[in-house]
Length: 224
Image 1 (cartoon, rainbow, N blue to C red):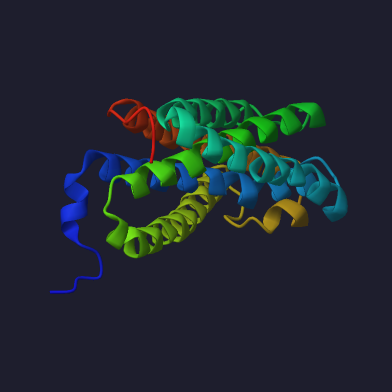
Image 2: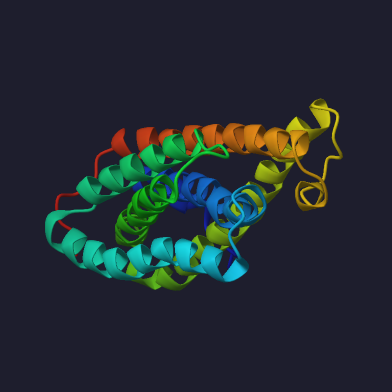
């Protein structure tokens, strides 16, 4: 009589499509936060402090763009922001898929700006859209479900990205471990970079799928 989550919620397109898009979006974004430090430190030779300063670019975008996108989506509807946000994120992943040892730091920063702004522009309006599809009495369970989506997507994305990179390294004859990137050099670094590119191609595909899901269903022009 009191289910953990009422399955009837999934009959609503806004809820189901929004939840699926959220899972795919968080799953793809994990690739950046987990693998980019390895690339910046072990491939391009930046210190941990320098790497942190570079990666904070994405966090700043999320902190500034997210609240603004949330407020504007309440006035103008969420679809414009969710579709635009996922488009920016997908573009960022495609850019990251071309990374190699000669890539300039500017390219990395541009990719972080695109992905960070895109994720922020998508996340708040999408959550608002999902909450707007349920009764007020269901806000608590829906918010908890959104947190479950985020955490499970991050874990799944972490495992997927690691598997892709280490499998690529193993296929090139190197130890299938990210720690080998710092332990050796030369060929293993090239194998890691190639695997990194494959991981970001998959991330772009996941983000693109989320974009299709978001764009394919109708959302109200104004949230209340």
